[in-house]
Amino acid sequence: MSRLSDDAPIRTVLRNMLQNSDLSFRDFVEVALYHPQFGYYTRGPHPVGKEADYVTSPALSPVWAFALNRLVCEFLSHNTDAVCTIVDIGCGDGALIRDLAKNGGANYFGIDRSGQASLRTIDEIPRGGAHLIISNELFDALPFARLVQRGEHLHELWVTEELEWTEHEAPLSYEDYFAARNIELQDGQFADVALEWEAMYGEICDVVERGLIVTFDYGYPQSQLFHPRARRFGTAAAYSQQRVTRDLLANPGEQDLTAHINFDDLIRAGESRSFSTRFFDRQAKFLLALGAAEHEIFTREATSVEEAMTLREAKEDARRLILPDDIGHDIRVLAQSKNVGGVKWSFERPLF
Image 1 (cartoon, helix red, strand yellow):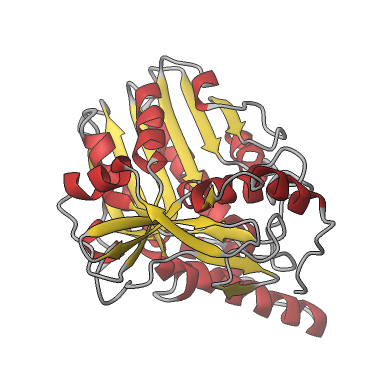
Image 2: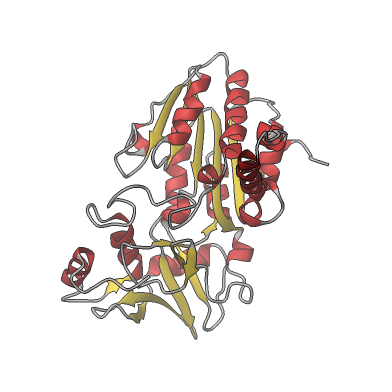
């Protein structure tokens, strides 16, 4: 992709912001992704799909929605004595929540910053009853800071007026983040952190007095996320036209910017609010336990050469979700519950 011209509207926005001082990379990400007019996620159609910049599990195959529908049916069967609310946070165009709503028996809501959803914020979710709250790649879309350890000092990466890197002493909030988790970065080690990971998950937990929160995302436990050798340069990446790069400052507003999340932040936030962790593992294992392999796409027979070609591609896409590699391996799922009694969920059953 060629670089944006200096006359691009978002360049003008950034230039105005950078006239008097540098801009933290965290704030650069906020503008690049969520500027009301020119942000990557707000300027037009949601950039997801095999023909777009990147593909997500729901866009890759209907097998994902099939498995989630099974989860919804199971949730409803365990909560026949309560008003049920099903929520998809970060719902994009709302395709998943519309599909799930076909099950009936509950109130269904999508939340998204783009304005295409029925709700705009977590605070608008109706209280009371039983909640099933789902999110897919929500937390890795939050603006994040890029940090680097320099000797005994933690630095934060900032952006100059020329859209080049510079370093400033990191605020105490990031020092406190690592200290509270007993994490010590090595000299020269980079790390990508959003303080909002734990805060946002806490907001979601505060909605639920009874129910289940299921989170799909790219991330690791903190021992892996901040491993000094495996992830010495952090996890920040840019996505455009199905390609991943590390040129994070190129083409603001025209490429996705993301970093893997610290799942321990979410687990801690839930358990401190009386949630129990019921599942934390690979997406492939979660979907298989829900019966994803029973989707008719795996057993259907083609009746023509053209259908055979289409079916073969569809099966390959579906397998990417449930085989122990590709997206089924890369995405992790966290499921936490509260006040659901002794319910055993199908995703907790051993596969072998």
